[in-house]
Amino acid sequence: MIKNIKQKWVTLLILLTFSAVSNAQIDTTFVSVKMNYPDFLSLVSKNNLGYAAEKFNVDMAQANTEASKVFPDPELAVGASDNGQRRMQMGYGFSTELSWTLELGGKRKARINVAKSTAELTKTLLEDYFRNLRAEATLNYLTGLKQKQIFKVQLNSYTILKNIAATDSIRFKLGSITEIDARQSKLEANSMLNDVYQSEADWKSALLELGTMLGNQKADTLYLPSGDLTKFERLFNLNELIVTAQNNRTDLLAALKNKNVAQEILKLTKANRVLDLGLSFGVENASVVTNVVAPTPSSNAVSAGITIPLKFSNQNKGELKAAEFSVQQADVLYKQTELQIQTEVRKAWFAYLTAQKQVKQFDTGLLADAKKLLEGKVYSYKRGETTLLDVLNAQRTYNETQLSYHETLYNYAAALVELEKTAGIWDINF
Image (cartoon, rainbow, N blue to C red; front, side, top):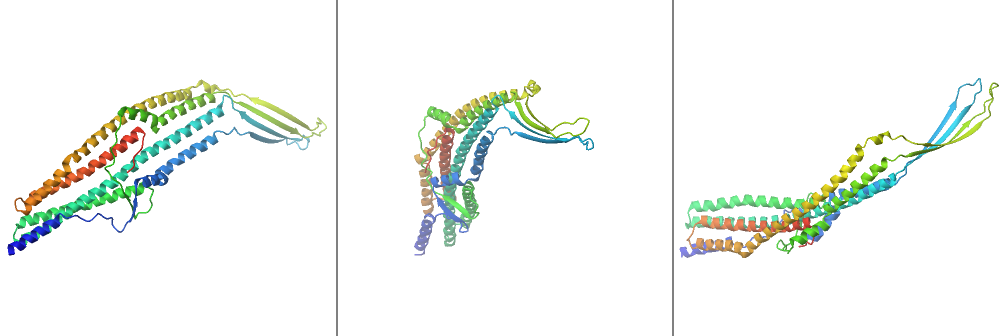
């Protein structure tokens, strides 16, 4: 009778050990906000502070374009003269002159073209910034999903070990196992609890990063991503990806526009070497002189003139050479960017194929084999045919296999993100 009671207790507690655990939850001190991926990406484009700061570069470039359209300001000079000979009644005079610089060589047009090409380059750089921001935000979103799964795996493993420890404590009192085995299971459970704490902290840190991406100023808010990490399978042709990248990559377009900017700066430098004319128009008034020696009536004089600068500075061609070298440099940088894009696409494609093969490894039975191994060890443990250490090893193997599976799924998704970012395409949605 006593033997049957012992057997029933042991069987019941072991069954409880491998029951489902409760879902992982966020600490109630935080406000949880659930969101899907499209909503998250939309909020990133609207609220990300770094992206908002980059937009000001476009506004400033447009303002500089407007500023480049101004003409040189005219100058107004007003003067008065008095010879100080009051006793001799020599009189006094007033003069007014208006002068203006007439720019030659198309300087104003060259300035406008430089400003316009710079504004176009700035817009392209903003698009490229968002291309990288979108990929970075997506990786952070995927990290949040991965860390949640890791936390659940660790919590599940801890719950199992905790129940085993509770079961072994009773079995020790019933005399079914030794005290060493009971202490061993308790030690393993306490050790696993530290892993649970760490994985929970990693999960919450990942969620806080999402808040940073969204420009969230509330320290007590955590955004909970939703999605499935198994929906990232695509078929790509490498040559088509390279062609698409060369057509769509915003950094390559930016390198091309940088060439245009360098060429426009060269034109402006040449225009600045052309002589400018100074135009002037003046009116001078002299009052009446009433002394008896040389009486003179009042008079008005009108003058006009042209000022021609002597540009001896044009003998120094340093600025012109620097502009020419800048054009050559921009051309080399464009070719370098083009080559770099091809390399990036190839590397990202190989990485994606490798991650795809690794995921398929799990689909062919790694998880199933680890689970069967654990179930077999548990069955043998219940029958007294194996030791606690064998069960713990099987549990550890199953735990590590699950963690590796979720890490591999994340790497697969991240590889797709990197591939589409390097190829200049984007169809990710989950």
